[in-house]
Length: 173
Image (cartoon, one colour):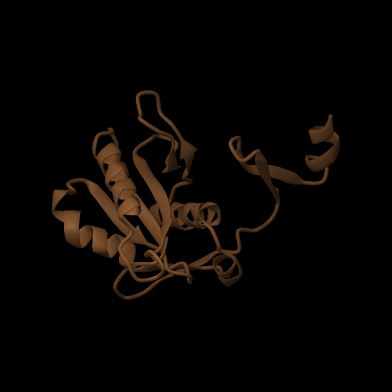
């Protein structure tokens, strides 16, 4: 009854639930996404939402931002999902499981040094994505572009089917 007479009646829906953190995030059901898109001559899609992108301060917020941007980029709604037989729940998955990705919001250590633990996590996710059945497999990064670039410089030759994307603060992929 709390849901029915409270937040549902007020026009809210659940955006996501984090059981580990014991949090639920609600959004207005009729709220516009606030995203607009355009395509330049090179075919690069740009999605803008300056209020949202400037508000990103942690990995969870980036994951939501990336979900909106990459859903528009691929033209299909991406959600957090886990298919039976997969090693984990991925952040960005199409309803038919043909598109699978994960969002990473990393920075260099103290803004300067390579992040070895984060590099290990990227390697783990690349390995998992390489070993699942999907047509499009990807990692999308935010915050510090140097992290995926440095990882690719060192280990990119080992990647076969996983694509790397970076979303800047203006929502450009």
